[in-house]
Image 1: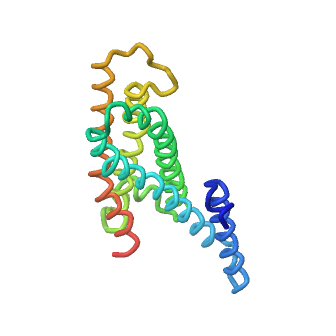
Image 2: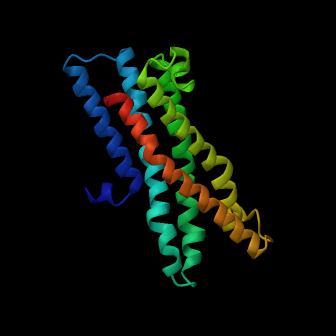
Length: 203
């Protein structure tokens, strides 16, 4: 067991193996790999990606950013050079996975046009399409912020990949502030976005 739990790759593989076992149990009890299962599968991937994305978003905003001022100056490079770049990799690809699987799920469910138009094609008669559509557009805005604002500015602020070795300190500080403000914007949006996603399925 220690060989599994002390190695992240082995632990993640074990998690997926257990999920496959659950799928086998589902089949053994009369389940079928049909259209309904396909929709479930992409919803599961959507949730997995979303947990990775929003979990890291909240880690940045509830833990890393507030703690940075209290970290001694000689220790801050360890965060910027080792922890943050790796977290940002999972962060942006978690965002991509969430958006892609969400759009596929909406397509499979037959309501992609309805939600992307926030229910306009229904004449706003279906409240679930309106709520889910608003939540989806908040998610799309958040995804855009991650890929086209936060990530480019963090690359500059942290000199990720050594792409900006000569960038002035004030420019780095400005990029860091921009990344922080858009990350905080995503934190604000994540709360009503999750309301829209969960509300459309349960209200």
